[in-house]
Amino acid sequence: MAIDFQASESPGFFEQLIELLQPETLMSWEFWIVASAILVVAEFLTAGFLLGAFIPGTLLSALLAAFGVGMSGQLWGFILGTMVGLIVLRPIVVRRARLGGVPSNVEALIGQPAIVTEAISATSFGRIKVRGEEWRASAEEGLESGAEVRIVAIEGSTIHVQAQN
Image (cartoon, rainbow, N blue to C red; front, side, top):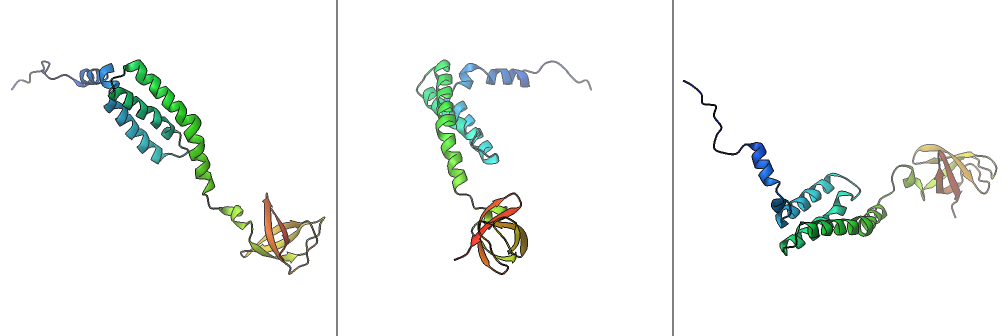
């Protein structure tokens, strides 16, 4: 039984790819909507709203393509929309994302009550106990051992406290 290795009637992979990458296909509103969807999915998988900033550009280009604007108009729409996303929208989204954060690690200690375990003077460090851990501490006024204090700041491995009133 002989196998016939002659070219088949259907186009190969590269011919199909070249046909798909024609300017008429790439500059259709469907292309821009698919690009927008890909950017939305990619943005959910990353952080920082960088990929999401391109979405206004792809949506504007899709709108322009739907109204029959040519390739150069769509590209200018993509550039304009992306610039709006990067310059206007991204800073707003990033700022909002940072505002809603809950303090963690040592920042969560600020405002917490603590007990002085080793006297603190205005010129020397002492020690405090907060949440079962001992920390090096400083204060603007002298505090005796056993005094109740509140954490006001953290600088490196030193906690700054003030007397709790």
